[in-house]
Length: 310
Length: 283
Image 1 (cartoon, rainbow over the protein chains, first blue to last red):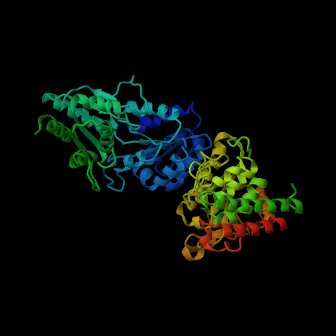
Image 2: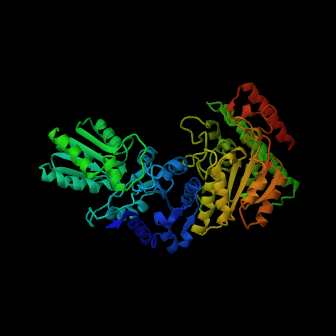
Image 3: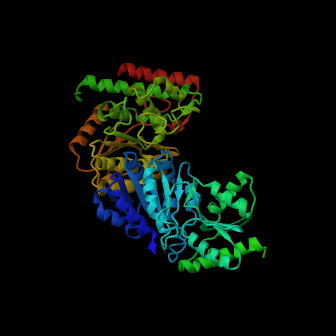
């Protein structure tokens, strides 16, 4: 079990030893995002900007224009909302090499309530032209995406849910931006997710298997550009799809697969699990997932309903 | 370059007039026939001083790593910068008349991916000082000694982000960043002091840890002197508040908010060009 933020930052620190162009910016959340650790190791490549996200992301653009690979890190809710225009107009429009890290995404910061839970960030970030949107689902991907985003020249949004999780993907995984991954083969229903929801999806698949339902599990660590082929291949086989996300049902994976299936002219029985059009409340993350119907039990129920029609 | 030589000052004054003529020409003779006159004309001497005296740039190598950089935070004033870039040789002067047209490299607001010589895209007010700060910090990261200049409008200092950047620049002891505020006193809806008073602007910048000087932004000698002061005071970020007149040089555009951004007919265009030409000849 490793927390995604630690895995990611440790790898970034390691990687930065040979990639000297990496610079990290922090608007007063360095302890939570672990950028402090980077600053401790590389004080000359770390800048603190205080509680000022707009400036932080504007500076990120300017720094990137000089050839630096800039990791600007804050909570997802602030990166996608407070600094949205800076990310769009000053980073994406001039195609700056800035990696926007949105921490405490989804309801992984359960206790702090709606102001700190980020349920719109995927919808916002993926709407910006040229923005790549990544979401690590386990420690393996959280580690491997560091090299991938450094190799990729251009703006990237990395959605990070802070949670301690076991590895799902094999250490041998060849992580590529733009690729969806088949995690578990099945034939009765496709369950697609991104981020930490993968772990609930796998738990659900286990329960379903005991009931005789074989679920195919897909993980989409890249939401944009989206791997349509992996999705369509699975849907053509199962003809039933459940999506689950720690995000609003508007603009996230539900929207992405909808766009994808419409474009392809492919239909499927469907259930979308996510946060309805509401503001969430404080609580333990697991409690909230049960409350909002994005836990493993909800996945089981949705899949069962699609397959058995009850 | 003797900044006290009349000849040198006059040559720059004349160049500013030429840029004004180009501004009116490019806006009037593009297919669109409208654009941002007022804030472009007020910044002509500032832009001239930057490009013909202060900044190290190489039109043959626009992306030269060691170049000085300009962030046009008041992006709407880009016609005067387009004129400067064309006159410096970054691209052909003939392109100027395609300003704001479909398919043009000269967008309505700066697009650095399209226009050679622009150091960044801009246009959403309030963001430029942060970008300039990032570029200034970049000099430390890549081991270069370039200077970064940011040209701000006075109205845009109403944006809180400007002060986030001002605070951070002095906090991080950024000494290669110079802001110039084109203090023409007008914003879209009216006089700055009536819409949202920004004064005392010098005191505000000083309180944020900047060195500050106020000059006549249409007087080349004063601008040259201000940049000399800047050279001698490299201990912190520096701001030049340049007192200017919106629409400067064209009698019917001066101090009239109507000419912030609008269309123009042939008659008024000819009148404007005649006035500017007269000023150029007498310079």
